[in-house]
Length: 250
Image 1 (cartoon, rainbow, N blue to C red):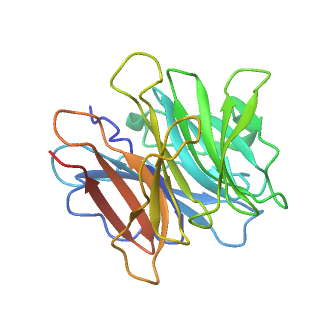
Image 2: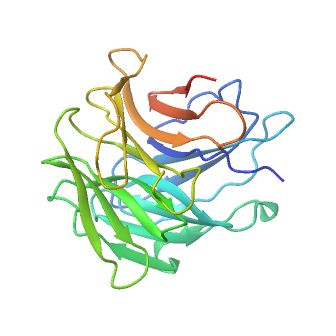
């Protein structure tokens, strides 16, 4: 079966065309009565063969969804900007063709305390080794935070981001060695159009990377690709419909 290529991204409005190097995809319509504009979540999967719609998961009663990350199996976590919650749900099997997912049926709802008017929660990523979430508070000020998935959901601020403006997306990069000493976080800024690389303690690693996107675009999502043999690569998504792949040296 197709394996998730570590890219799960949500955007407001239309999903746009399917990028030529993505060979299959899953797209879901999100309709929330609390949001004037419906959001559409595009889940891109890496597989072989021609593009095909695998399943549709309409989401109901969610509050301004912004980010999504894979937990395990069909379990995912969605971040809500205005409520500040991280909401765990399980996707119905793709073989079923999808199915409505209502927020009331969420397996867990983690309150971060950073909903509006406290700045809003944007991207979220998950570290299975730590069983912990890393997530972003968008602005005033922009923060990178960590929260344990298990009660009492201890959380701490890792970094206050002042150099790149608002932050939008985050991706966990597992290290090659034991434990989490080699882990890194990729953070993307929609305002400066840059990517930051940092350690899990919030320490920056090297200078920011400037993205090659048009001036009117808005970078929103980022995700590391599977760490197979070869260079480290990640995908970025910029509104309205720009999906790019960046790779380090061989």
